[in-house]
Amino acid sequence: MSGKDLLRTLAVTGLLLGTACSAADRPAEEAGGRLRTGLTDAERKTLGGAEERLIAGCMRDKGFEYGLDPDGPRGEVPTRRFGLDDVAWARAHGYGLAEAARSGDRGGKAAAGKSPQARYIASLPPRRQAEFDRALNGTDRDAIVVPAPGRGQIFTSADGCQADARRGLYGDLRKWTEAKAAVVNLEYLTFDEVVAEPSYTKALADWKACMKARGLAYPSSSEAIGAVVEENRSRTAEEARKREVTVAVADAECNRAAGLARTGARLQREHVRDAAHNEFARQTRYYTQAVTTALDRARSVAGSD
Image (cartoon, rainbow, N blue to C red):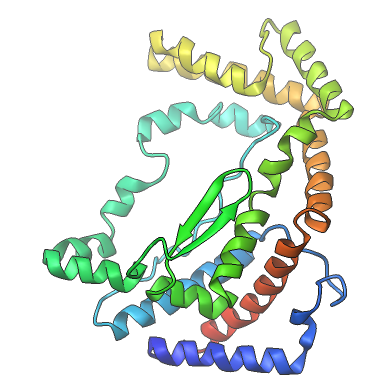
């Protein structure tokens, strides 16, 4: 199926969804659902896969090859805002520093550079490479500008295959970009409130006391990691690995004993939920509605293969 046919499928699906149930035009609470503040790994894979298929069809229509990633969209790397509490993982990986140093490629850029898609683009003459970029990313990457609360602004294209794919899934591109920019930042925006909570400061004090009793006096887990990195500059790889694991295991055991990560995660859920229902209610409602509709549209794209 061509890219245009896929987008027509989405348009019909959107029309049916809109006429069959008007819930997408009402606040999510009224529609009988809870406000969304993120995606599951399965949902991320479904939406990412649909977006890639739409882009591929669009690029083919424009005369270019666009290969789908055989492994599919990757899940987001979990962030440990409140430290490491997985003792088994710490025993196996430490903080993950040694593995990152050995690979020298945290983001997988080296592998991406050797992908069939990268080789195809490199094989094109300069003029066609520029045309490929315009077809994919549009004629003006700064056409849409929206605020990213706490982080400045986000700029994105209004045309091109990527923009068309996202518009086909999520609807109004400006509203979607603004809503997503707010919702994905809610954890970041509420972090200072979380760590100021008495229950969190108590858990952090317990973690510090536990670490100090083991001869590891650090004010926080991030400070412990920084110290390990600095100390290991003068160690052999084997010594560095041993030290990293020792500190990481102690960190994780103390974190678990103090309930630091559990407390932080619980408080963050509460603060994010409060922000989603109050200060960022408008953006969160749109995000919830757009994602709900996009998941239905994504399944229709998958079913059209």
